[in-house]
Amino acid sequence: MEWPVLDEYEKLVFRMNTPRVVIDNSVCSRATVVKVDSARNHGILLEAVQVITDLNLSIKKAYISCDGRWFMDVFHVTDQNGNKLTDQSEISYIEQSLGTIYYRRANDNRRLTALELTGTDRVGLLSEVFAVLADLQCNVVEAKVWTHNGRIASLIYVKDCNSGSPIEDSQHINRIEARLKHVLKGDNDIRSAKTTVSMAVTHTERRLHQMMFADRDYERKPILQLTADSPIVTVQNWAERGYSVVNVQCKDRTKLLFDVVCTLTDMEYVVFHATVNTAEDKANMEFLIRHMDGTPISSEPERQRVVQCLQASVERRASKGVRLELCTADRVGLLAEVTRTFRENGLNVTRAEISTTMDTVLNIFYVTDALGNPADPKIIEAVRHRIGFADLQVKELPLLYDEKAEREEEAVGVAGAVLWSLGSMVRRNLYHLGLIRSYS
Image (cartoon, rainbow, N blue to C red):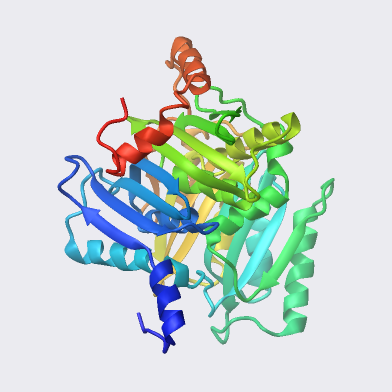
C-alpha cells in the first residue's frame, strides 16, 4: 500500500481508524482464528466479512462484540477443504486486507462497462439477453445472475468486441438499454423491468442483494416450497437491554454470514453483538441489533419485514438445480449459443457465474426444468452432447433438501431460536474475546 502524505492530525485519525489484526493458528485445533479490533463505523463488520469471504474462506464460528466505540471481532476460518491456513503469504495478505478495509477501493472493474438488469424470470430469458449483447457487439467478460421468487437480478460486465475497450458512446449505451429493457419486459411483466448502464459499481454480490431488495423480491411468494432447507428467522426485542435479537437457523454454506450481514447493513441496522456457530451442515446465527439512531425494532410490520428480508438473503444464493461448468476457449457469441441450447431443451438457469481469464472462460450454471424441478439426466446429457462433453461438465451438488430430515429436529430448532439464552450472549462474546475468564 502506498502511504499518502499526511499532517499530524491526519496521521492520528489514520492510526485510530486502522484495524488491528491478529491471526493465530495455535488457539484452535480445527480452524485459524482471525481477530479484528476496529473503530465502530457503520458497515465495518460487513467490510471485514467481505474480505474473508472474497478470499474463499469459510467462517465456521464468529464472535462479534461492541465495547463503546470499538468493535472486537473473532472469526474461526478454514479453507474450502476445511483445513487451517498455513500459507504465510496468504496469511500476510489477509492481515494487509483487513488492516486497510477503511481505504479499500470498490470492486468497480473500471475497464469494463457494467449492466444492471432486474425483471421477471422466465425460461430462456438469459438466452435472449446474451443474444442481444452479441448482436450489439458486446463481449461479456464477467457476470453474475441470481433468481429468487420469480425475479431475476444480473450484473454483467462487458466491453466492445472490436476495440476491447469499455463502451462509452452514449448512442450505443442507449441502444443497449432499450433493447435489454424490451427483452426483460417480455409480454406480461406487471412490474417495470429495469436496465442500468454504468462504468463503476460497488462489490458485485452486495450490489445484487441491493438490486433484489429494491425489487422487493422478499414480498413475493416462493415458487417452490422447500421446507426442509428453508431458513428459520425469528426476531424479538430484549427490552432490558434495548436490543432487537435476530436468530437465523439454516443450512450452512459459503458466504452465508456475508449475505445476512449485507442485508442487515443495507437495511440500516447496526450489529452490536453476534455469535455464529456451525455444526456439520447447519448454521445458527444470532445478532443483537439496533437502528442507526440506537432504537430497536418498534412494530410488528417492521419485524415481519426483517424476517422476510433475511430469509430472502439466505435463499438468493442457494444452489437450485444441477451445477454445470463450462470451461473452453472464449469466442464472441459463446454465451448466446450455450444459453440458447439450454432454452431449446427446456432448461431454466436459476443462477450463473461468468468469468474470463485471458482467453479462457469458466462459466457456472445451475439449471432446473421449466417448472423448477430437477432436470432430467437424459436432457442434461443431450445438452452436453451438443455443447461438447469435454467442455461442459456436471458437478456433484449437495441435495437441495433432505427428505429424511426429522420434523422433531425442526420443531426443536424453532424452539431453540425463541428460547436462546439472551442474557448470557454478551458475556459469551467477551469470554471468546479474552476479556473475561468465564461466562458460566
